[in-house]
Length: 197
Image (cartoon, rainbow, N blue to C red):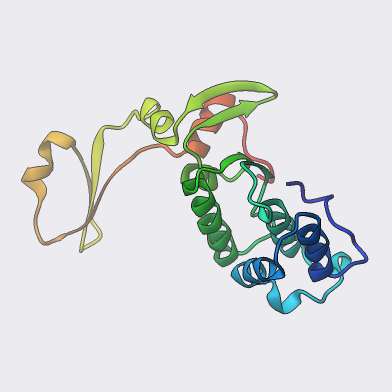
């Protein structure tokens, strides 16, 4: 799925999807369901050239999954979407994944990659820097084995994992370990920042 090609600009959102549905002998009820699910139903009569970037992404996603393919290639599927719509797309993709559909995803959004991918590659300038599950990669780069405590009075304390039992009391309002995220790992591996930074 690309955000620049794949639909007819002078046709409405609905007519674009109707064309692809008929091509695959699919009922229009399936189109309606997906339009409603991804909040495009109210905009179905707009010309494709008049819709926003996020709407284009959703139109292309619907078109890509309409015929229940075994494999889907997606490029930045939530580009231009607000967090609510991104969540809806993520939920749909997770459902497709659970049905056994293979999804190849390219994204700069490391939270999205962590949430959606079973396996991923961190690429830089065409070279694979890391490969594995998000959890495996994060665990590999974990350097801080400490626990960070936050107390009701705002005090913070860093302790070793072995000391946790000694510090459990009602005044502790937050306790977490410090593990790197994929973005931090990417920056560490490349010495570069993300696009737009």
